[in-house]
Length: 323
Ligand code: NAP
Ligand code: GDD
Image (cartoon, rainbow, N blue to C red; front, side, top):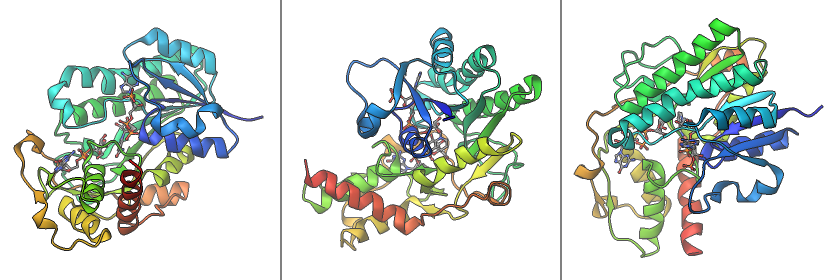
């Protein structure tokens, strides 16, 4: 019989790729959205008739319980969160409520209604923050550097706690940054790819950025959702780092993006260290060791850094041409 999955935050980047992936595997897919005054389904428009949308908010336990009751899922992917690190300093309490306590609300909904459902929690490399070890593994001590990172540490440990307390099949994927043409425009990669596309088409003059020296382990979201699914297919629940094992600076992303559209003198267009885009505390250097995911799950990234940059810039050039 076909399996059923419930994905929270179905309008988000990862959920759109995961929903496609699960539909291809024959799953019945339910996804939750929260109420908004404008339609917000850009990323799932192409699959909307194949999935069931339920209304639920991470602040509202009864809506989460109802979503689990209605969908009766075999697998729950808790992807909903306030996911933008910079905003977490402007809205630290709300970020704690959504990204931290929201995980407990979701776990409670599952424990109450469908305790045998397998549960995936979207943990983050932002938990490593001011890193104490290079590269970072499942055993590296957390040192979060933002209200978002702190909330994710809570979400991570409450997932582990429900696994140990209630014997739930609950896994945390410690995912390093993953991007795509569907990435939100506020994140640095998409901000760059979109601005470079516009600059190449004469629609924008300048690209204002913050810290160009920050280094991230960037992968492709389409590759990473497979790792989420693999965690829930394994015999035992556990936590896994999902990464590429390579790190690159924001500046490298900028240079390669401009190169993709044939512009070598990128400095002409870029303003760096713009105060609006600097953070009260920075995460300088992330690089993940995914050897556990490789040896236990058989997962490996498929998309290289240059392929990712090219994919994003070319998609934005096409998008901006059509506007
Ligand atoms: P995203 O594009 O920002 O999507 C987040 C989703 O959560 C959206 O559907 C959003 O709905 C929903 N949401 C926000 N607040 C909510 C609330 N109070 N109630 C219900 N839904 C709410 O994020 P993403 O990049 O796909 O990431 C997915 C998950 O992985 C997040 O938990 C993120 O923190 C985590 N993560 C991401 C990365 C990465 O590099 N992408 C790395 C590690 C971990 P709206 O569309 O209505 O805003
Ligand atoms: N957003 C943004 N905008 N970031 C900038 C800019 C800018 O103009 N200029 C420099 N940066 C730097 C940030 O200071 C940061 O060091 C780096 O670019 C990446 O920023 P983001 O793309 O906003 O991502 P993030 O690393 O803070 O967080 C993302 O990855 C986490 C996993 O490590 C998000 O997807 C989180 O949800 C995720 O958990």
